[in-house]
Image (cartoon, rainbow, N blue to C red):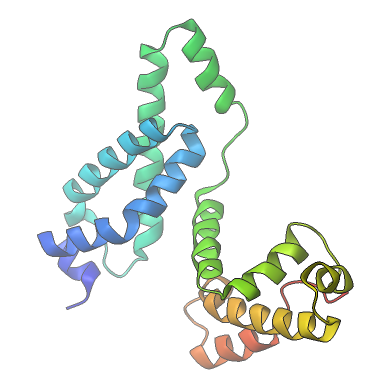
Amino acid sequence: MKLETRFQRGDEEAFADIAGRYSRPMFAAAYGMLGDAELAADAVQEALVKIWQKAATYDPDRELEPWLFTITRRAAVDVHRRARRNAGATDLDAVAGRLSVPPPSLDHQWTSVQVARALARLTPQEAEVLRMAYFEDMTQAEIGAALGVPVGTVKSRTFRAQRRLAGLLAHLRFGPAESRHEESEAGHRTRLCPVR
């Protein structure tokens, strides 16, 4: 029996498995909304209680993650409201300032967590060339000079890193109706950062 069905039927081990898998991404989402680790931890704790209480209402044929993150978002909003009510004027201004800009969507936060996990699975050399290309906006020649390696080596490392990352993130690009074969082919074709 699949995990979602066991959870919906009140299986405590299935709930513990879900909590173990998703509490960190839920924390990342709550922290992104609240900007405070203690409040985010409170939100996750409340969300997990609500998730367990609402287990019977969950449709095991639906995707689990969006359901979990909807409950997490609501818990974060509740925690924020309580913090605002209990805060003094100075604390209230700080909380309001953090939330004056709308937080990234839960989809965006979930994607960010998935990308971070995928990057962590690359070799240090692969992650380094992508970091230099993406975050430092360096050309292939500049990366080669910085690392003391030929441009051809940079290109091959970049290609391998892009290919691995595309494969690790294929589930974010394609809907469930698309086949694994299509995902695999697309992952090999995808170029994530330009070769300059």
